Image (cartoon, rainbow, N blue to C red; front, side, top):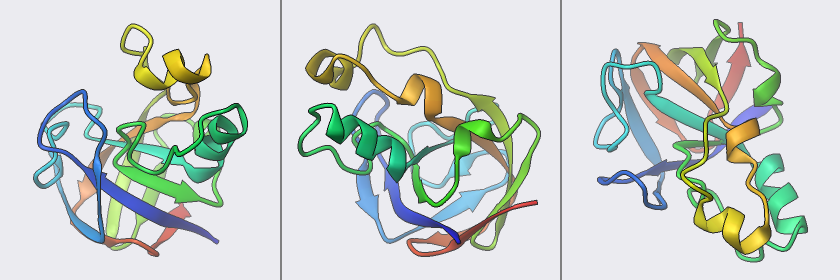
Length: 143
């Protein structure tokens, strides 16, 4: 079963995010209170714990959910293989995949420390189609 292992938010862009137990997903915005929210195609970012584990194995000691500025850390799903347009239920919400990967910020702190970063290749972005509450431990279902 695929599930949410962490939810992460920040009130500023370009910083590591803080872990929260639950979050409210808002239609045409993203996560309430998160700096990356807005009516655009990259409302919420997702990264798999398995991707974070790859970075730890490459020497990224101490890396944890939120360090890649992802909003949702997942487990049990290969996110970057989901085609754009895929609908994904996260908890009581419905989202749609809008982008796979993104250009890195001029070599982020993680890339400088480890020599690589998985977010540009393995992180994905979704927009919120149906809002609601999402909590750590909620199931993720690809429709």
